[in-house]
Length: 156
Image (cartoon, rainbow, N blue to C red; front, top):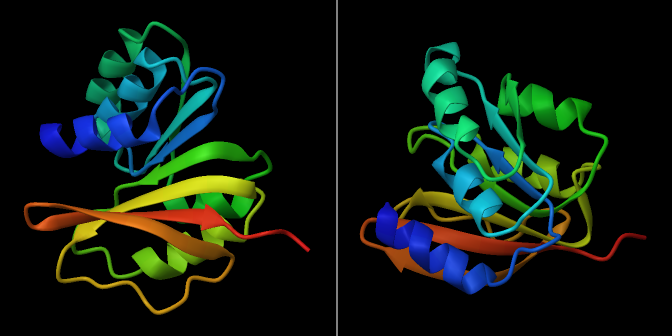
């Protein structure tokens, strides 16, 4: 996980002034990394109330404020009104609806033209040929997992 995180953030480059959304935030380490690299605003979304205490403790050490939402990813996407520059999705590997959720994210107000969405998945879980509202731009393998990069398609 550390190697994947370092590599992904090296690929993303300078985050100063870029907004960042971490969906399925877990402990908040991805949101924290984004904030420590200058991203802002940064928002973390995590459904599991059992992770709230550790998530908030981790986010408290951030050099910049990170907004935290304890709610399901699906509900968050349905209610979204603000676009982000970068969206990182790290659903649990058994989560069956990752491609549908990614498609909903890419067609939602969370994305503007050019928004970059990354999804962390098990290597054996291949994406469909097309994701509505997105164009695949890259894919990187890290052991038994892959991070796919999608760019929000031109809005009509």
